[in-house]
Length: 177
Image (cartoon, rainbow, N blue to C red):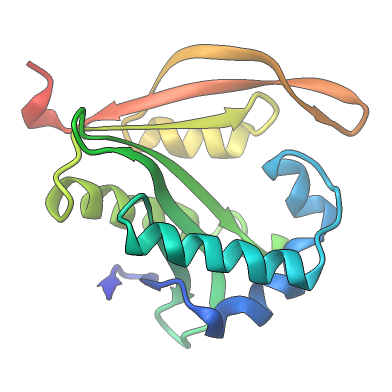
């Protein structure tokens, strides 16, 4: 659907469920998503159904990230909590397997998603939250043009401690006035 040099974004569908379930309970990955509480296959089936329902109502757009070289599933990303009047949305991304981290897949996927938000659904402002300990992700978001605008203090409880969430935003350049 949307293609870069390393990855392509395709609509998130049932065919991706096995890939999601395979890695979703990996504690190393889950700590970046708010904790390591295990999820059952049924909870992921229910989650995917809610995502598809929200996509039908245009409350969100969710994609699977696939390798361009071999169509391998790499992760998911979405724009959600869309406010069509203010033209804002909130972004989220996860690259599922740690061996795929640090290879540029997430960066390129976010570039494609931001481009989708600007050119295809006419949003003007995007935001996201990143755990304060996730230096790698924060570096990527800064590289993409996001700026910090605040901190949600002690927003998550992960590995026995409260963790801040750094709030970041980016504006479409032609709409900042």
